[in-house]
Length: 563
Image (cartoon, rainbow, N blue to C red; front, side, top):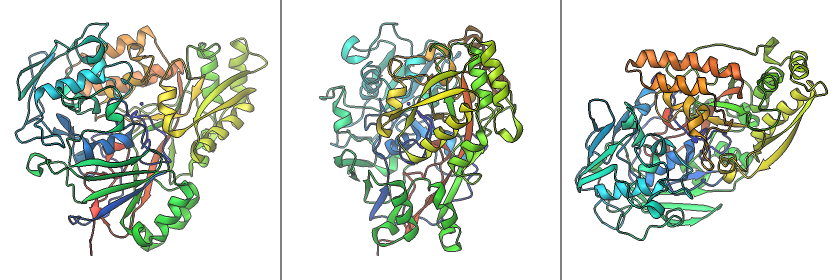
């Protein structure tokens, strides 16, 4: 769900966010990458705790899986390569440019490049792009990026290609041209078509709702040749990918090999030891317990770190009894000991305390703290007073959805202990990491609260607050608005901001709206987390990509030597 967001989701196994993925045009805060151009050839290994959520791009929506998708899939546009602002720039991919809008940006036209093919050598046409989008709108798989559902002009009862048939408002006048009609002006649509649901698939092929998740059809430089869910995934070169059509992907390694199901502590141990094939490996952010072990100069030379550009937060389900009262939600905000949550995450080297929803890397960020406490350790007495005012003089109890990984459990325990001081009882609902975002993104399955995160999908405030707090973006499945906030004033203000043509004015308005939303307390902002990654000594071209939650950019990394 980021997408969903938010955090490195699954590629960086210790991260928490749903999907979205971008930091901002101010940079990622990275301290630098592992320099040197990768050579062509060899196998790059990726050590990972948890498998990817979905291989189907209509369904995956977190920073880690979106990073992975770029190895096997292409879209009309994509995010650039490089550290900081370079990674958040929207650039052409399958298309010749970033699109041509009409006067009010409600109609966008894209032209496909020549010599672009699927993995079987079939040319990619505009009909394939159209089919890929239509397919992604099927309710059984539409749990990934929501922007197609939000901005495309389509009937209210449209349920994707398999149920409703072709969508008339996506036109393909010829094999190279595709025209999208929108339901609103949308100046950022060039970024929307870079989202995973805009991946093309053969329109005349045997593609079903389930087939892509089992066997992807590659349009990028690699294709899946082996996949044992929860264990191994192998990519090898797609012989029909033409580097001359792709200014984004280096595609230096001959193959990639993921190993899933490794204990996070084991991953750290292997990356620090740097033995054998692990010299050709990358992994996610190190555990808090390993931070002290990577301070030697030799290991620091192969350490990459930077802000994820995301917010770890606890959405409070505003539709649940008790949680539907702003006073209860404000009490929870007051009672949380954020310093303890930060300590449980690994301290200052791995996180900063958050008091706003939007992270400081997002354009328009405004600093404020509506629920202050001494040293950010919580104010249980003030929380008790609000609970009594709300009709809960004897306290309150709720269930918190969490992933079954050590960091999230440490964060949850810190919250549980802090809220107990305010007579708030927190029960845990433990969910497998591979299905966590899908569960909390299904409104019938989520509980009273969750610990999750959000990263913007591209460098705009419009991709941060609306997906997680706009009433029109509450879906039965694939729901990013986990708080299920549906406030008329907030909804109206979002509509007004999107209509602004001055980018600076709009960014400032998003920052002000952040504070307006937090007055309603639909969530508890917890942390701005950092990625700290150790790579193998034979890795080159590795850096933290601001567009994928600070994860190592898969399309640029490779080996320093194949000798």
